[in-house]
Image 1: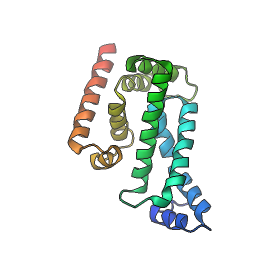
Image 2: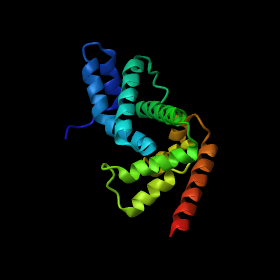
Image 3: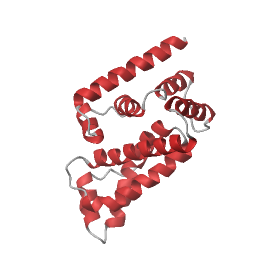
Image 4: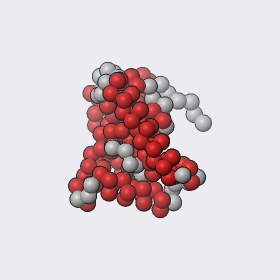
Amino acid sequence: MPTQVDDAEILRKFQDEHTRNEAFNLLLNKYQQKVYWHIRRMVIDHDDADDIVQDVFIKVWKNLPGFRNDSQLYTWMYRIASNECITFLNKKKQRNNISIEDEAYNLADTLADSSYFNGDAAQKKLQQAILTLPEKQRLVFNMKYYDDMKYEEMSQVLGTSVGALKASFHLAVKKIETILLGED
């Protein structure tokens, strides 16, 4: 397995027109899987996640020349991915003209039918409980639980205060616990 190139090197190579494609390939190799799983946990469906990943990396390609290093490269891409997920889910709800609760049930059905999901029954129950959360809480929960992000990083990604994120995560955990304990 090749060694990972640091972000500064990727950004340096991206600034040079002759090494721009190489830099983008390095960026894809380093971050594509992490971005995919972040998106997949939000939208559940593999094909939808693949489409959104493509949209995210198109935006990254177009906007990387203007990246100002105000945050880490991954934090910046994570924000793009999160926004794309929320936009996708909102469009899907509008297109299907359904409520948030109905959309959660649809995603849970997609999860149950997915040939790409290979978790055990407990993992499936957890995923179904997560799907009942409002989008922002679901994002916060996924970032903390699956990606082990620090609240400060999440604050940069979501543009929300650390205190609000802690409260959101706490509420999400309580809701998930209630659902999981209520089903046993």
